[in-house]
Length: 188
Image 1 (cartoon, rainbow, N blue to C red):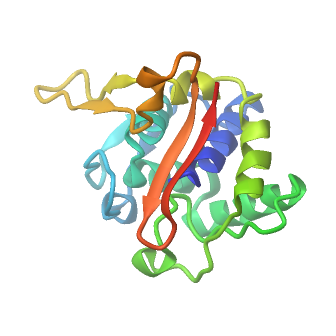
Image 2 (image 1 turned 90 degrees about the vertical axis):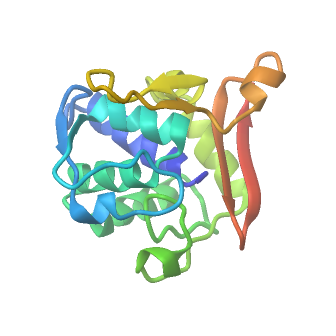
């Protein structure tokens, strides 16, 4: 899920450049709703604002929200992944190769791999991401309530426990897969 730093950064850059707005309504596809792992239980056809989906990604590490945002911004997750890889190369992330917008193992998402990045690659990405307007606000949020206008209001809590345990920590993102183990990119 540290991959989601790139997903968040590209989404917020699209907002900054005027290609998207935080209040834009995103319609969830069948594919996005089918993502496993961490999720906010999006339903096919459900409509959420881009802002809500970005909080779902940053706080709840939601794979379904990541795919919905990728599809919204680029037309397909595959096209978004191409954007991710171009940006990674532009940042000098020589060992990075993204296969999806979530960080899930490629074999679980049906995308060809590899999906890899070194600690140095993530440091380069993180150094750029912290300068993206709005990103630190998202990733430093400890608690976020989804679907405020419904009966059920699921509350998301950030997986980055260091936000509460280490004074000054303001981000960035945690992740875990069986192949990579536990991962974290932290800022303070």
